[in-house]
Image 1 (cartoon, helix red, strand yellow):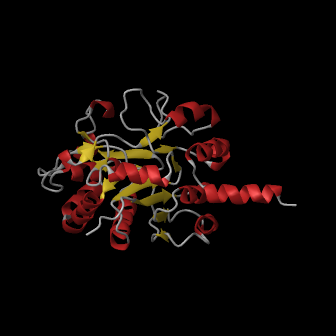
Image 2 (spheres, helix red, strand yellow; image 1 turned 45 degrees about the vertical axis):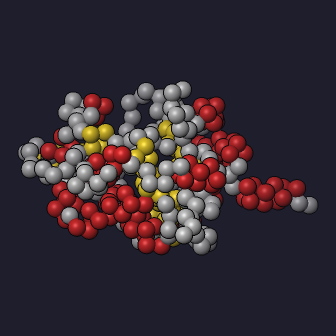
Image 3 (cartoon, one colour; image 1 turned 90 degrees about the vertical axis):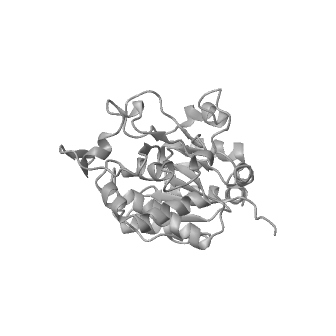
Length: 306
């Protein structure tokens, strides 16, 4: 029986900038896209984002997501569920609406084909020194609520699950198909863990990493993942809650696709971009990596038409 070529289904979690989201969808051609738009986004913006999208794009039911909320995990899992049911993709990539590829479809498929059973995700068992004085364990030990981008913590320790290896990492990841299926299975069969994470802090940075890192929930993951995030992010050492926006002066480093010289694999995605701040940079990226060739040819023809 012939093995189908490796290819990702792409979950895109968006809430604004429909022009960039549509440009991202074009750049991901021919991969299937499962697009989630925050239910709080105005209807006019949602329509600008979704009207007339190609058939390979499925718009997911809208959930009211938000900063540091469990609902971000719900939206991600809804994407896994749809991608597994509707495609035979070898992997599932999770992107935001401010991301963009740094490689064309052939290169991305080639990379995944060389790691057909592996996920690309940097996970760190907690406590992790980079997450503060308690290594991030306070996210688990206490109940939390997010209110207007502020953390509300009930300062009474709670009982934590004993059968879970707590871990953290970015929500941006590329999961092998069987690992995405394992995450969905845990959501469906472990309501106790869902309830626990609904009051954990920034669950989208700990739920999936913890599920993957727990042998009883995802057997074999330790030997079936590449501990390398495929995203270039323009962190500059400044303390901030979100990555900085990428602009034209970032082009040199971005086109190298490596944050450090000792990184073995190049980054094939990057963030954050916006239409207002990054359009010129995105034009450079398109030309360098052969993205949106059909759209660029159409635009060029329109310019020279009499």
